[in-house]
Length: 251
Length: 340
Image 1 (cartoon, each protein chain N blue to C red):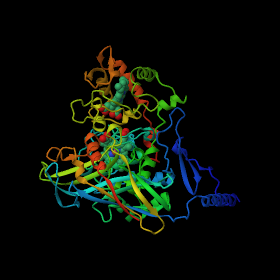
Image 2: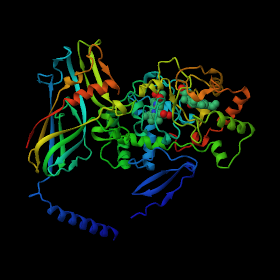
Image 3: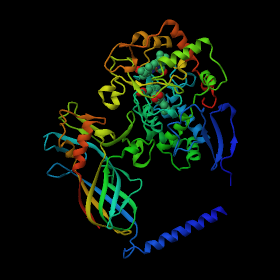
């Protein structure tokens, strides 16, 4: 009995909301679809295509570096509709990982159909999720992006080798969500016009530049390891995030 | 349809701590604690507390499957008869006999804790287990490998499914289950509690000891949990390179500060302090009374008339120890529901 009543109410509400939809000034309703964000990676100001296990020379430091791992968190993606309202993607946490197949390609599913003009995203993981216990998906500690002894996400993790480092290797595990050295950074980008309509392709291309980690920071001869939050993590991620730009879209 | 909220069975030997009720086909458990306890910090949230979840957590806690070579379980370093502190060892010993750098603390009333570890580096009970599991000198395992091992084991696989209703095991469920067990390790039936509840009375010695405790110790070890969970420098290990809280905050003021431990069951958790450097309660009191040296980070409340230390006569030490012994809770250390 109770169940039936509930069903009727739900039906009634959904009918109501449908009718209000049709009164929108949107000429035709576009179907929900996937938006994908592709992160392309280049190295240094001359924009060499960046891949793992290839030797690069850092232009500012003149140090040789070969990366074996490059991963970072992107989260809290929001899209701005033509009418100025924002759509926040639910449970929006991703790891960009150059070491896995399709790992630089974020798939945002079931985005409401329509025209979007801007995108906003956070580089890093918001402080709330750093203090909320056991998480799943991209935030699962089993992904190797969580510090066990000093709770918090490793928001950017890169490792590799370099003849400039005293022991031949480098490892930067950067994160921190508290105080002045909090790493998470929100950036928004103007897209022009992104159309989401069912199966139609909607792909956003971004460009990130790993050399920007050392845009201001000391070279590997001075520091080749960082495994904790602090000023170094803040500085290195800060210049890297700063250099992430929007490139173009495929509609 | 089942009626919600009806108590199915009350298990007497769980003391006043817990009762089972029936909800959505699973036996949900509820935390029970005395009225003079504050609200717990951890209230389970998305981690629905059930009797099956608690039992699964207990099974994991006692199972060396969580270590790389199946030799070490959580219980190897956290023994019920010692209120889930170590078996009298100063520094913990993990996989392959490897020595840790700190003393295994008791696990008592963990649901009230605001942070975990001697330096408070862990901010949530649900991810507590991640540290010992992955620590090279403790269990040296990888979460993904544990999940593989558990998924291959039919009994675990079906228990996980029954508790969490998901087709695959994820790290979150391993952490949730261990949390269900740990958060229910509530100690509230010591002589201190019975006196508090009017069911017992202190003898002369204990009574004087209690007054001394209230005068001298409660700035840091307040009732009823006997800690304020703050970080303080009490002059222990001041020359050691274990800088304690500083490791987490990188704030110079936090050098050699450690979390104030609860004193519940303290008679059973020897040896004492973050480095296990003090062997018995008498020596702890000797330290407070005569052993504290001046230093920049020494807690201000440890100065009396400009001199460092909490001075105690030998007679006062005896009485304080009598009181500290009233914090032992044998109902807790012998509760079959917590045992393997």
